[in-house]
Image (tube, rainbow, N blue to C red):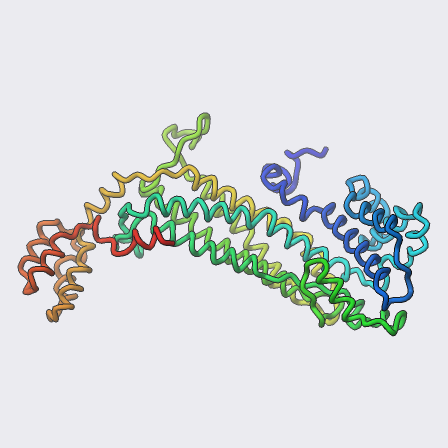
Length: 455
């Protein structure tokens, strides 16, 4: 029985609707479709290159038919490829045979059938298909989702740029910031990581069984094969790798997966910090009609979106880091350990997408609770020990730090009156004293508001 409830992977069961956008890039059908695209592009390139000489240019009608076959590849076509694979036990060879079968009614294309997959090893097709898969999944699905998170963080940064908030370093009350500034921190980090992921240049090759154009130069010795291969690969929108073994070494894929994992780590940090702000009451979550937070505690509004995001991004990173560490390692000129691993790229991207969507959903529910934030600040006058001792240092009072340490450390907090009594007794200029006496935990925010607004 095939049903979402019987799916082995939650990506194809519970979360199938949320990850559907990636099916167009990482399903087996998508891989077959890209293989067909590469194979057709290869025979068209051979036929159109005057230096090749073994194949005459195709007529406009045949070129149109080749393009229709590539663009119109369907589930029915994919099922036929799978049927052929059941005999060949080789997925790329099955695509080649399917293309010959598909084009046999076209006399011109059928006569050129031996040039489908000409001089290619399977990896010549696969590495280009995989590069296109990753680029497509990033540009069409993952990076737009990251952009939505960054945009929401920018909104929160601007909306709460001036809202003072108690910091917590080592979990303890510390120098105040603003809620908006903390959101701006994450927005800046995320956008920088997004640029790094987008900037990774996919690499491709089409140079035969050990990367030396061996069969190519025997069949067509007068051809500039490296130049032709470079034009072909870059024509697909992929950067050319001139030196490879049988496989393209996957270094660029590893760079992309590493970049995604680093981006995900930033979001995990955001998930945990926001979870903490909700726990402290700094953020409240808008309630959705009909939802429950606990099966036994009716009052609960749990921060489940951030928990789900953290969990799914952890799974994504486990896969991404394995992909990044394993794929660039191949025994001698080729082993097959990369093949089965590459089939899980979509799984890693799927968990990324689940994490991004959960994080965005959680961010969309957040409402600041200024009264709760202000109450925390008002209870922490000892955070002003820092500016007081710093002003004392500026006026060369010996033992400034130690005097404030004696006044505040381990006391469980001091009152406004205690701090002001200490300040009034200091031997400092009156303007400096006035500045210190005017300070409150809520106004001691430095340039946080400005930094948040200008980020």
